[in-house]
Image 1 (cartoon, rainbow, N blue to C red):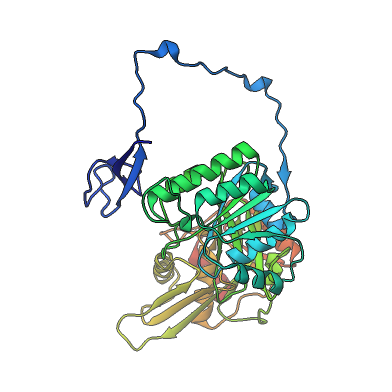
Image 2: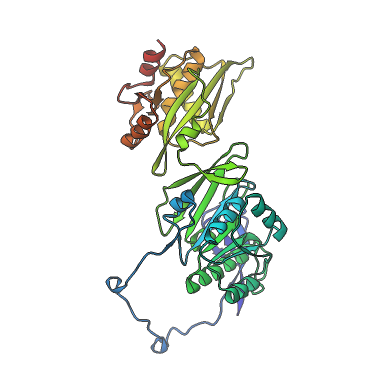
Length: 436
């Protein structure tokens, strides 16, 4: 094997023969990292007659039967599209302490009911994993190996012939065939490529655990997400019990599904009715509180949004939000001031999304605006009301997508009144109608 040293841009995958502070292709700074590639033997372009021609197969002649391996963890199977494909490589990432290892060991316990499970840990000791399994009261047999060498992993898979493999984590695994430390671009790419080949050739589903950066992005080269079949993100706040499982890539299913879990003493438990749990403990006729139906994938959740306004003694009022974009909040405050007559230039404004959720869709704009107005005017909204609508810069209230789906969830939980673009045309009209 003949190796060549190159420099690799982690943003646009551009290659360079020498290091530079700025990528020549995407103009990003400090994104070039050292890498090595196998240049091998140069093929002769003029000797094509000796090249073997592979047979071409028509798609109509291929018999295909989709085989899914269900984990019996309903929310996890939902996000995957029905379970693991028998030769798939799935990457699970999330913040430290969010519950990746807990969810992984629970999946291994369920998979061990029908097939052999092999768990490779490069970070945690066998005693730590055993302690977690006993704390979660998991009884099914799981084979564990404390290995961080790729060749040892591949040899063990070859000899043990497991039915399901976990590698925790891909950033700490290293190969003797590639120079560099574990976690480098070349090591992560090579390790993932070899595990992918193993999964495809031996028809073994492999679950990889990945690290994230402090910005919440997947650590390592972007090519890692291109190699694997599915990328799952486990999101949540360590100070709240809810965890959301999303997918940003899925070759065998949709990418708009979301799974909801609750962190309990016995591990992560599935949440069958998220809306009821998110609204649990809400006070009667609260000031500054609004319910908004939001879409998470193909599901509708009813979420409580709270707002608090307080007179500021400083020259510049605070704008603070938890679970909502602060820049979007500034726009909503400006619209309230200009078109609804709500003076907030001397008031601090605080917005909170209950349950640790993060709202990104514009359907929550009107709910945020009405919660702020309720707090400022010290008047509650009707208790059995949900509010949804996008707010424009001219103060208009716009329609939201999939209204029927949102209304169905609203009726199921007993909410009788809906404030949307069908009832009011502007934010000023909505404030005048409900607060006078």
